[in-house]
Image (cartoon, rainbow, N blue to C red):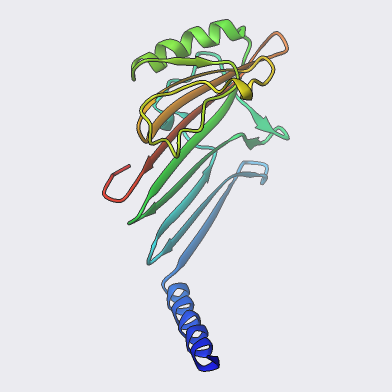
Length: 192
């Protein structure tokens, strides 16, 4: 038995070294005119696939327009409250794009605008809280999860199997805060 364990340990170590040798990692941070960090980009490539992470993404990557006069939500006055994560392998893929905004418009106006935007992609479902976990987005039907009700947040969503566009809206002072989200998944043989 000890020889099998040693052989297995050696095989795992060699495999790990081969995978690490085939990896590349690239990190890029951009700075604003004051020298403060503006956004980051991370790219990791391995023989098994790739991982990309971006801050300060283009909200059009959600497939939705940004409502007129909306402003990006920024943490600490500088860091963008948005991100894109993409995982791509031969076995599965996942892409998530999210960006947060604020507006002087009331939540009802924001919801009205995004019902129209989302309606371009199909039937819009409205939930007061969240949606049911549908086993990794394999279901084409969207259903509200009444147990996830959270305050005054209203979510609109449209999508089918493996694809969702979601807009979450909540009051903020006299206006609104809202997030635009795009989620795409694929299994083996599918494309993103």
